[in-house]
Amino acid sequence: MVTLVAGMQVIATAGHTGHGKSALVQALTRMVPGGLSEERPRNAPAGLGHAWLTLPSGDHLAFIDVPGHERFVAAVAAAVGQVPAVLFVVAADQGWQAQSAGHLAVIDALGISRGLLVVTRADLADPGPVLAEASELVAASSLGQVEALAVSAVTGQGMAALASALARLAERLPAPDAGAPVRIWLDGAFAVADSGAVMTGTLPAGTVRLGDELVITPSMRPVRVQGIQNLGEPVAKLAGPARAWLGLRGVSHERLGPGMALVQPGRWTLTDVIDVRLGAADAERADAGRADAGPGGAPRLPRTVTLLAGGARMVARTRLLSGRIARLSWREPIPLHVGDRVLLRDQAVRGAVVLDVAPPPLSRRGAGTSSAADLESWPDLPLASDLLRRHGLLRASALLAMGISEHPEPVTGEWLADPGYWADLAGRLAEAVTAAVGREPPAPGLTVEAARVAVGLPERRLVDALVRPPLRRRDGLILLTAPLTAPRPAGATQQLSAAATAAVRILLADLANAPFASPDADRLRRLGLDLQAIAAAGRAGLLLRISDQIVLAPGADALAGRILAGLPQPFTAAEARQAMRTTRRVAIPLLEFLDRAGVTQRLPDDRRRVVSPPAG
Ligand SMILES: Nc1nc2c(ncn2[C@@H]2O[C@H](COP(=O)(O)OP(=O)(O)O)[C@@H](O)[C@H]2O)c(=O)[nH]1
Ligand SMILES: [Mg+2]
Image (cartoon, rainbow, N blue to C red; front, side, top):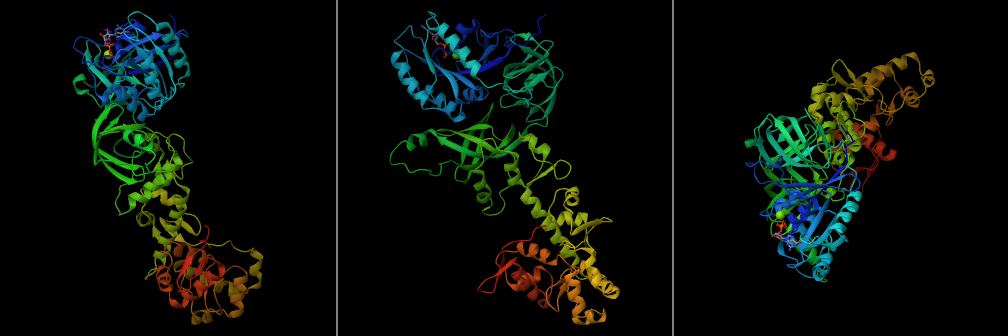
């Protein structure tokens, strides 16, 4: 038995009904599209036709031929959306028609860039004028300049040239990724004796093997692949791109219908709301060509549109968020990835690139606009860094289900974080702990759960991952202990008497619980710390001397800077005092200290702003 597996490519036909698409595919493949008994038993619903030819290279080229009665753009979009190339057909004797334009708009909106233009029925009329007109229209679409040929499926004229043009096209098509996640939009379903339910569809990439467990969307019902056919023969595995014929256990064919997909579990986000970047609608493209049309106008978007995504078709509500960024929502969830292309249809057809398949809710006023403004600069294939910038934190598995497998190192477990957001969280945790220990009566620290709630994190392990100096974890509590600033060399303490060193330790213990509660003069006197001892402790880095009267623990300045950076800018001394939970006696000299250090800047109206928040 020959086990050499030949490669396969799949292309779709498009063009006006009755222009000879099926006759062309039939002449090329010498099969009746959709007429294979294995694929279309008598009681099978009329699905998309399937036929293939063998290229000189030995590879196979399969065609998706939308049935003749299918005038709906949705069916064409579903077929064309699965493949990288199209065979665009126009009849020589009938010329460019409404559906020709409609199908080309779909191809253009999906951004398909490879294909052939075939003017068929060339035995019935001079193909010259139609070739010229159609070439020009096709050239203005995403297809651009494609090879154009005149043929007759009846006389065979031009068919050999078409076969070699197809071979050249197939060679230029992208190399398939056998490891890609599987998603097959169902385009036919029926029952076959022994095989149970059978579904057909196009496998654009990835591999399906006998025994694989996949799920049907939107029910997420698990099914097992118990039969696969390729080119009419049973096989053990099928790698995309290919037409798929799959026998499934776990579902009856009556439960399979249009809009459903067979997907690899865990690799797709089942969603009913997405953020997209809109392409131009055909009307706008025409406008853009006019001299009087202003550039960059906001797209006119109806409140509801028909959304075509893969094989699914639904009514979606729209909301324009910013520029060309829109949020779409609908009822029945479908499996999507970021980077997927979808179509919006009302009077015109408009393509859109899916940027976020799990967008954050638009709760606050203006939240949509600020978050969407960033989306405008995203690439068509968003990266982990783009999604993390928007979401802050994401599980690696959630990112994988969005279609992104490359990501930075997790901060803990499978959690990924945006670096800026993570630093911000660390600051917020320090503030939450500081606030807790500064409270009356003072608390030794915060429990991990209280800290999780205070900072608004989904899991406690994230709190643990955020604990770093000056925070420390002990006995289920997060404490503020270690000095914020780097300690000076140990030798420096030698200038202090043993008594003064002990007194400083006592002070630091007080300050650990209330970092801005500088001891008052009485307390310092009782501890035996005079100005000289305080100055020596300051030089040794054991205490932070704010003024002769005010001493704090080392690092209190950095902590103050972070707390102040979290305030609405600019802020008053009273607001700063409240945020630091301290007194005016401490707050004013501390602010002046921070001014001197360049952390804060005092404005003419006496308010301040943080100019360089401390690191850490
Ligand atoms: N004379 C002639 N008739 C053709 C040719 N190609 C298709 N036809 C006829 O045109 C009609 C429509 O063809 P069909 O393939 O069903 O068109 P489709 O709707 O685009 O698939 C049929 O009656 C075909 O026999 C051709 O090259 N020459
Ligand atoms: Mg047809």
